[in-house]
Length: 240
Image (cartoon, rainbow, N blue to C red; front, top):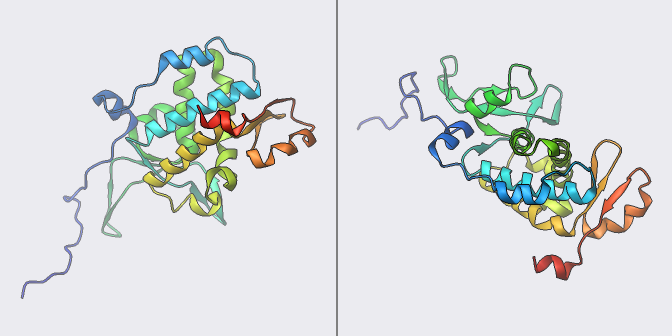
């Protein structure tokens, strides 16, 4: 009988490369940014208020959802001695052959290294964690609205907070972020986006503060928050 054992990998059996954001834009498969709505909502906006950060977070979440229709999700990188690390991570779209292990691998990129620029991520990364994707998306939105650059940075931090609050994200983020695949992260991001109208947004000393509707009563006890955008009534939010 012929052998049914799998053939060993060789450097000539290269799997197809994943798509990058740059390739998706060039091919027209990347969802277009709604520039008219972006300018209508945040054009000429410089004030860092809770309401403005909420709007910026809505745009940034939508852009992340757009990104994950063309690129793939990867969990954050590991740091030696810290399994729970949230170190930003990305994987190269083009596979590389590892002769030692006789397999093809997508090499990890280091998004915080000086040589790993935004252009490098857009042109060569096929997988991104949420923090890396948000960094790229915030830069793209700021290119359209330079005056709102700081708002989009605040929105990046807000998304981190939203993901870490299980009553908002619906998952225990510290346990789930390395197990989720692309469809899973899209569901989590869509769930977060749907909760924005009933989430309280506050401006803290450095980063924004977000509170689920069930915890909004605690807002008055947070003395370091200088501006709040409180949740809409549930009935009004559900009608939007």
